[in-house]
Image 1 (cartoon, one colour):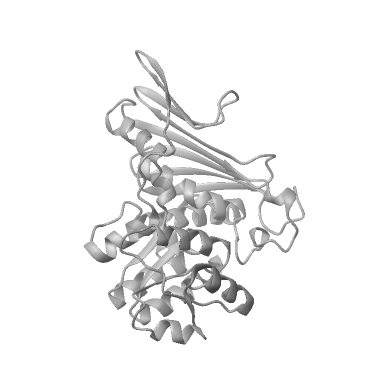
Image 2 (cartoon, one colour):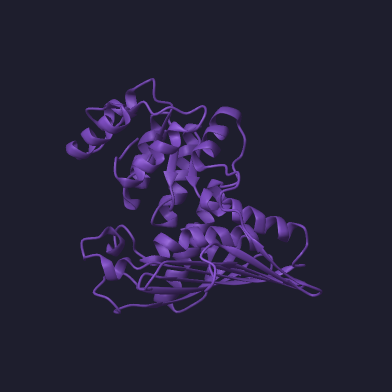
Length: 328
C-alpha cells in the first residue's frame, strides 16, 4: 500500500476480505500516518519507497496517493515488475493515463483502475433490464452527481485544488458517472462542456455540464456539482421502448428503478446489498486467473478522456473528440 490515508484504510479492509490477496507492506512519506496504518492493520512499514519496490514478497502495489501522483507511483511499480492497482480516477489527465497504460504494457504487468462502482448490484440489475430489451434501443442518458464539500470545507481541502482536482466535481464525481454512462451507452466519441465558477471561493469549477456523443449514436448529459445542499446520484436512460429512472425519490431514500414501457410501467426496488464483485477481487482475478475485469483499463481511459474533453471544450469553445484527447 503506497499511501496510508483514509481511502487506503478502506482498501485495506477490502483486501483483508478478498481471497487470494494479502497486505504485506505499506509506505507513506508522512511518518505518523505510516506508523498508524502499520499498527492498525498489522503490516510492515517500509523505510522508503525503494525498499517497498525491491521487496520480492510484494507482487502488486496500490497507488493510494493524490491523483496527481498516480502516474509516477504507477510507473515506479511497473518498472519494478509489480502489478498496479489505482483508485479512480486513473489520473488527472488523459496524457498521464495513456502513459500509465503504456508503462504497464511495456513491463508486462497488470494495470487495474478501480471503476467497480459502475458495476454495483443495482447497476447490474439495471443493465440486465437493458440487455433484456425492456427499453428497446438506448438513445439517450443522463447522470447527475453532486456533493456539498465546497460549502463544508476550507480552501486547503484537496477537492478544491487545481493540481489534485482540476475539474472540481467533474474530476472527482464525473469520472465515475462517465464510466457508468459509457457502460450503458457505449464508447464516447466527442464532448461539449460548460462550467460555472465563482459560486464559492474555489479555484476549480463549482458545476460542470457535459454533452457526450457516443459512438452508438446515443447522446448523454453529465452534470456534476460541488455546491448542492445534499449529495445526489441519479441516472436516467431513454430507449425506443421504455425509460429507466434510477435514484432516491422524495418518498424513498433507497435507490429505485422506474421502467416506463410502451405497455406497462413497473417500479422495481434495486438491491444495493446483492452479490458484488469488488475492485480488489477483480484485480486478483486478473492477476491470478487472467480474467479480464468488467472495470477495464480501457473504460478508465475513456472516462478520464471524456472529462478532459469536456473541460477542453470550455476553454476552446468547440466540440472535442475523445480520440483527440487520447492521442495527445
